Length: 485
Image (cartoon, rainbow, N blue to C red; front, side, top):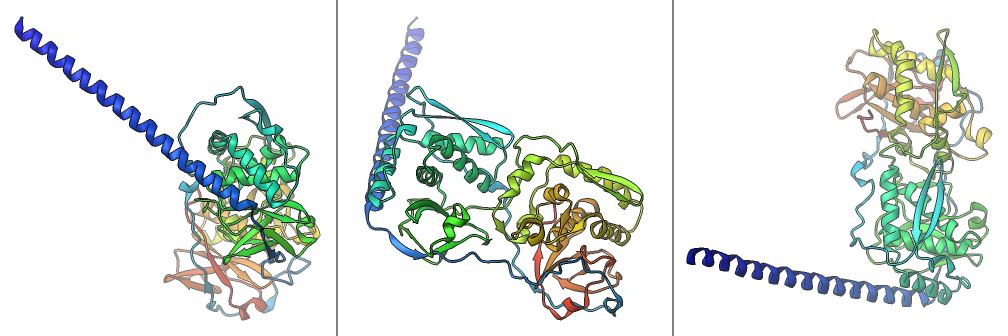
């Protein structure tokens, strides 16, 4: 009996000690949370005070254009002058572009908490998906009285009072559910902001910047023509969009192009939001899952007497419609909608099997040269626009960089060969690494490997052939990722 009492007494003591330890830990955890929140509140107050100060005026620089003027209006065709002895191309190799799929949905490191109010529900139509957000009812009632520094700072402070961290968490969750990259998240934030403040574009811009700052993105509020715009930093070069230089970094204006270009000056603040140092990454690591269905009238063509059709998800075409114009490797490395990829394998795969890699590449070259209508961006869109793979099939017309992007995808997916892009003045082509070093034609050496020119634009050009005038140029060589399946 005494032994039993001793044992029971031991467990009572241990339980009491554990309960005391648990209680002490809970108190420490709560104290730590309060200290962290107090620090964050002081940072927020300090930043709000900074916004009230006079903003600095910067020159709004005109949009840059991708180098390469003088694209032919009509599709070029191979001629006898292109049938010369093979030459080695002295190319200008470019650094391999960073491509990190783990960047999708950076972890939003903040403590999850319950919403302590009856939320106001906002349903956002994100292409073919409806996404729902829950915000404090007070947020939509906030008024941005004007666009002066003091008025913007006051609005920012009122947003801080509503503690929108849970909204940022909701956005991160939706981003991961829909497989959106950084640009897709920016797009979603802007659509949400337009639902919250449907009649005030200045408030939309301010709320968008606020939420993205909370998710640690390097974005700022700018003011031009007394209207607020979002300025964002990008990991990649962006074309066709005006920008400002702040501390040696480009910030691109995200607004209606006409409004952004009316004035050559823009005012903004110098100080970056604390820890908001993530530039927007335009790489597309996964095809967005934004609903939609395959087009009823997919692009059709007849090849080798056999009609082919490649269905396209129209929602993705809409997503890419106003995508920032950026570096070519972004388009060539972008993940492709798997339904379309499987259709490509079903339609074109059988044509490339049972033959040599060179013959298969020649067949794909002929398909690119004859299967699409040649049309420059100016004629088709009245602006510069590089097409993603899905867009090529949707529009059915393209020019040299679009064809090179799609051809590089077809070669990697169907032939499992490495490809590089060759960027000349006024032309983009490709070069393919064949295992057989005896393949004839113009070529270049990269890392000791031979890449043979393949021009998917010049009609009649076969593996190794390129137009004579580009032999005198030194192209930029854009190395692409190898695994796309």
